[in-house]
Image 1 (cartoon, helix red, strand yellow):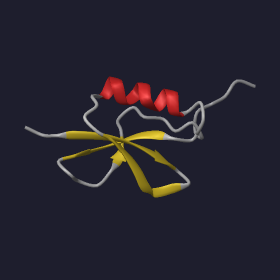
Image 2 (cartoon, rainbow, N blue to C red; image 1 turned 120 degrees about the vertical axis):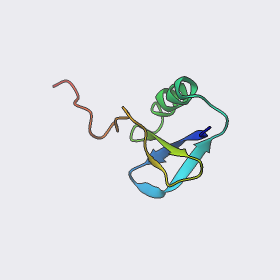
Image 3 (tube, rainbow, N blue to C red; image 1 turned 180 degrees about the horizontal axis):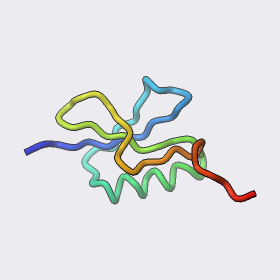
Image 4 (cartoon, helix red, strand yellow; image 1 turned 30 degrees about the horizontal axis):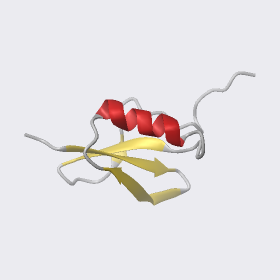
Length: 69
């Protein structure tokens, strides 16, 4: 059994991940959506069994999203 942990990261502080303790993916995505109201560049990261943090599959940074003209 693998343990997936989610966290919040920002391109401006790549070495500083805020772990989201005991949250499943849906709950972690809700936290990210709420956090983006104050910090628009945050994105979801994940790690498995204590490995290095990686961008979560399907996660998109606000800085790379296309915005309407």
